[in-house]
Image 1 (tube, helix red, strand yellow):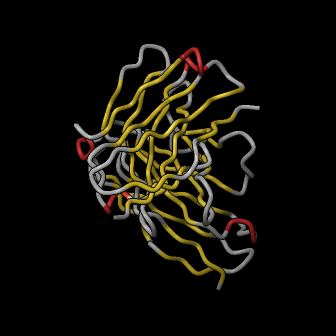
Image 2 (cartoon, chains in turn green, brown):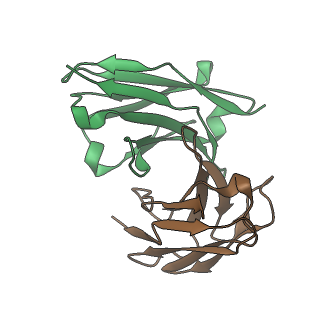
Image 3 (cartoon, helix red, strand yellow):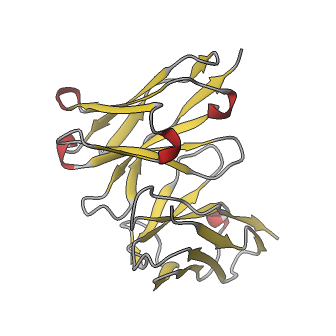
Length: 119
Length: 107
């Protein structure tokens, strides 16, 4: 079945970087975009950016510009999100999600990756 | 950035109630709006896209309407599994912002 499976929980120190993976299966990876959304404890969903599965083109929220890198490996049907210069406010659940073919909603979601920033 | 404001932020209702949640956009987004349901500790689930199109597999008691700057999500008869938090998201432009959420709890 169509699914996205993310890498496991991470604990990082302030100033470090984290890289989360998102492996797709059950569909043609290159046809769709993968979006990244995070949710801090008790907070709303926050859109971070997206990567085009075919050409690797990216778009980011200005909030994360310069700190986030989105990549994909089409041979592995996997997308990656790397966030650098981590601070305590980055403690959150990070989700990858597939955009619909026409770009009108996120129809398949990964299970989420908990990232905890603690000294 | 386009701001989305949901109302109410919290709603207490009973099984069988008709429930309506509103999402207002800070500028015209045509029909580029989606609705999601999120249960605690789970990933969101797409319910409605293009403002009023029901995602495959979603029960017909869910419906969406609106265009421009004002949108609604309606649950015609609330079921026990519908007690969750609901978010709207605009897909008109980047960044693809979300509303602050509406938590639906049991009265």
